[in-house]
Image (cartoon, rainbow, N blue to C red; front, side, top):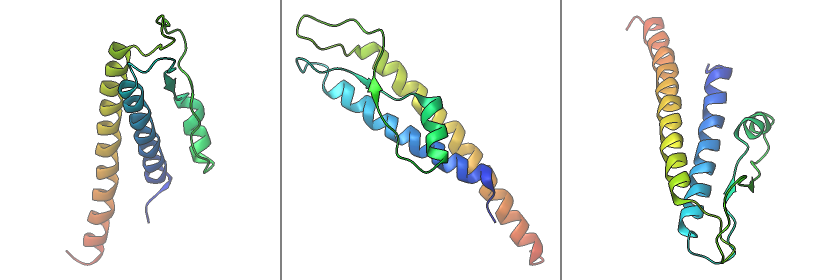
Length: 112
């Protein structure tokens, strides 16, 4: 009963969850010598998720490396967390809307 949009929203939210974990790991390793920040090529990975594959991480591009070899930029990671939260909220609102439409159709079909 749920359409392709709902399925795609669920996959999108899965990708957002994977990115959330990745960014959290970057922040947790901000002081780990030699740690290199990781990211997800969001557009490519969403297309990959639609095919049912797991997302792959890539090195974060354009970050300044500290003398200890670490390149985590905590400000960048905080922006990514905020962006991720916003995307997740939009996707969950759309998903709730889809579920509400299905519920309304079911109740309407039962005379409710």
